[in-house]
Length: 384
Image (cartoon, rainbow, N blue to C red; front, side):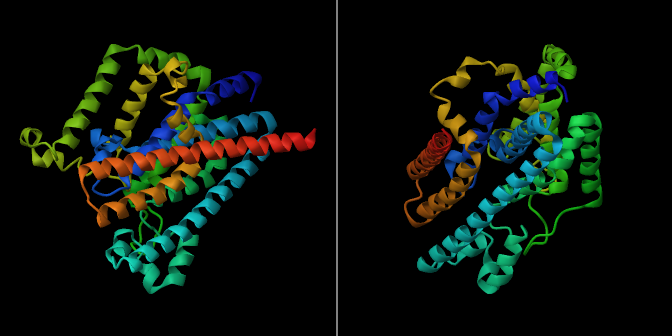
């Protein structure tokens, strides 16, 4: 924990690619959460083994590690750990409010529109039969309403960040190796957390922690490995291998929708990869995401001028205010789904609800950012 490390962390903390990728992840999650939405065919999951959740968890681990590592360097580890737990509490409070309002909204809409299938579709059937029990399970992060599982996963991963951060600051390679070992043990021994009512988490935290920790490891490796990473990116063979693997994943995933590709790829081979293992995040899925990350950092350097262009600012702003945007996206995806099942479910309507939803999420991001600036100005004015 020296001034050199502090400067390195500060430089990475100002990387606009973090906010850009978090914004993209939020937009893609919203589109993916609208069933039978043609616009969701443009999201990451349709072009390979990994998807928006992988992006969200990896970049979230990268960003959180940067923020609290800098705090640990400047103000001490104890302060950083307490601030992490404060953030976990904020995430948990946001989840509880979101859970209660979301479940109540779905119940209200289902009863008013005589659409009981919404209860099973959004996995809240238990709320009707055992409302108190479901509420308790919800408080314990064990109830699994549709579209809230990503936030539940992130809360659990953030709760263990103090331990991960301590390891990454002192023995980063050992910490990463321990994460790999936990991932392997969880897959081998079938470890998972209990949920209600299906008894298993949709995203197994024991496995998904590897992507979160890997993001943190990349955030803190700093100068000792910077030269090696640049040398790897300069190797044509490694670039070609990453690109070929992405093309391979694209062919496999696309073969389920394109008859010509389906005839070329044997069914037994496709069954190994489709559908991709989301619960325990299969190794080939992690490899696909790392290949994407490798090529992205090569094509979009930290000082890329386009990151500050007006075209990308709405996405960047959604990444900066990711929690508010995520919560808004959950409600907006339900609203979009309701519009499509009660009205004309045409391609034009799917495009319209998708655009309106993304515009609303962007509006929420700009409002939250503006409101925070006003609070900051008020606090400064009160002190002067």
